[in-house]
Length: 250
Image 1: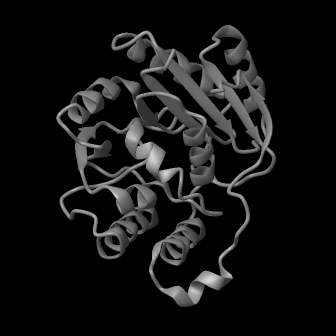
Image 2 (image 1 turned 180 degrees about the horizontal axis):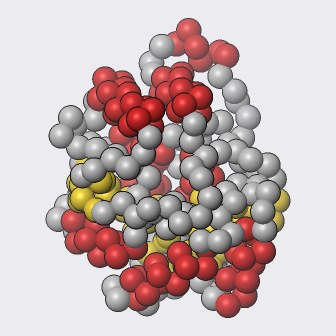
């Protein structure tokens, strides 16, 4: 049976939050639909995140656990999850409980107004100043490079239709920035506002240097400047070490 909702979660050192994330999100999904799947993609965590994922897989056959062979970065981990998703609607959310699942219903209702994708965005920024600067810089780059509508914002908390997902996974790069890929194929974007929850466990993996690298990679991989193309990596975006409850369609 085809699932209605696929919840794709990239995981890196998220052992403390995964069980709560699963329980809270599942409770919200079941208010909408019984057919669902969770896809947890462990980006080669150094804690025991995958042990928690294995337990969730044993408890719920609708949970797919994927462990990557090395650390490929959040965006490529999400891309892996998208490739393994089967739902009519695909939800992306982080593993740290900052994306409160109570907003899934609001995103879904907004999507049903006719959008291809809906992003949940905050009215207030809670991150450090350099993170704000990096977000603003990325937003400007998307406006110029990919013609993002200026009145719309993007984030890592989103829901999209499977038709859009099917298009973007065909364009497999060694480095994939999901929102950049989305903007190449659709400007039909909706936004809702949500209250960003405070981080309960660990610290953000984003530093100023990582933000700068992301900005440069977006420009290199998604611009039309042909002089850079011969120097871009041609490697696969990820490789899988372990997968549990694989649901590949025959």
